[in-house]
Image (cartoon, rainbow, N blue to C red; front, top):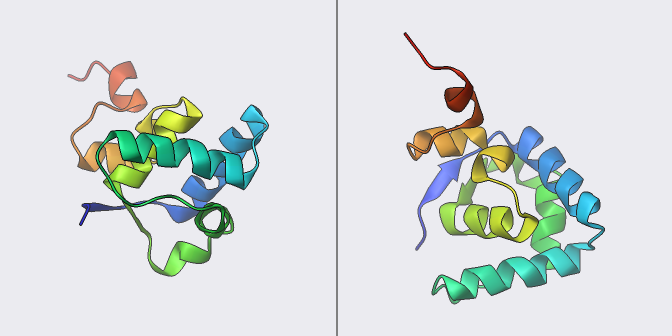
Length: 106
């Protein structure tokens, strides 16, 4: 089972939908592309258009988590960073975020 990360589902939902529409893709097309990425990473699961719709409609708000594999597959398919989709998950994983890259610190 893949590790799950907490995400701000409201921000994640809007960002996911925004980037899907920027590419001009349907939920089916994004699911197909993300499934290809999942399979390349060795996962046997697939992403479905129904799951994409649930995420975009914030129906998963009660859960508030997403598998790291799915998050990475979506970011790869949309050609954006994980930080773009879920900055809190990127920080929790110890990945450099856009905010950290801009702030040189003390």
